Image (cartoon, rainbow, N blue to C red; front, side, top):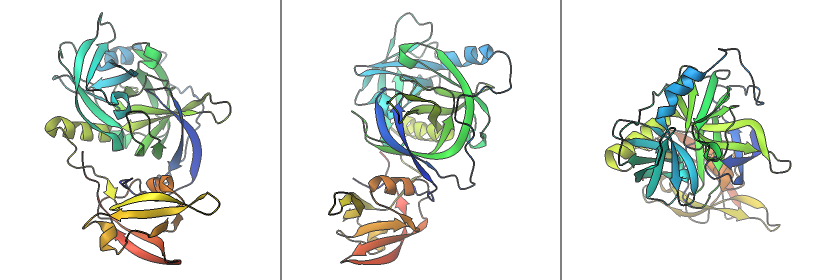
Length: 355
């Protein structure tokens, strides 16, 4: 496993079960409150906020920009980006497929689409409809300006119910959420995720989280599952910020690849090290990238990473959460164990290669 995640100074980690909205599979994952500004979480139960008596006009405005995506393995949602028929969705919705059926609410039959490109580290993909007629590009808002308490709607195709909308608020911003691997999609750490109380159900993945004015501010991706009984927790879902989604999607459309990930990399392949009792005891360096930050700092295969900037790193999941939001070029203090002795080295983070 190559450590590729951005560093964010770790906050309090809380364990949750997350449900990927495109597959409906309950998976174990961790959500970290990593806001540098200490943005508090608002109430996570589904909330009714003051506002208009109806959001019908917002739903009517957004529906032509949200499509149902069909693959051989399931259903998901997507958001229309432009008049050429480019559609942004989740990488886990696209999976291993290269051909898709897409359908706007009101269409009598799906139209064909093909894969443009995918970027699993951010769980994003772009597909393109062969016939873009009638597809209306969404209006995107500035996700950096959203804040806890803002009213939002999640619009997508939960359980295949085309053009469904749910309402809630933004509960918190700047969450770092780790989703484990699923069939056709590797594990990913999503930095800066938006937490929302708007219900997100299987099939909502890749759809639109929109403001009360109808601007897309996020791409719904995950819903939390209840730790008791395996049911879905109420009012805890996560979305990829729209600014990140547009940036990555634009790179994929322009070049077919991601050329600037904006994500920091430590420059090493790592694996969890188990102690004598079978519990995780650190992150072992399997190999270092030539010229990368780890090699320049003197790390070498066999070293065991114990901490980053003082935060304990018992396993690779903890490492991906600790390395969730630093920028390339940032310097971090890495505590490593070598030959039974701990030492601290300063690593200058590089940039995660694109796709």
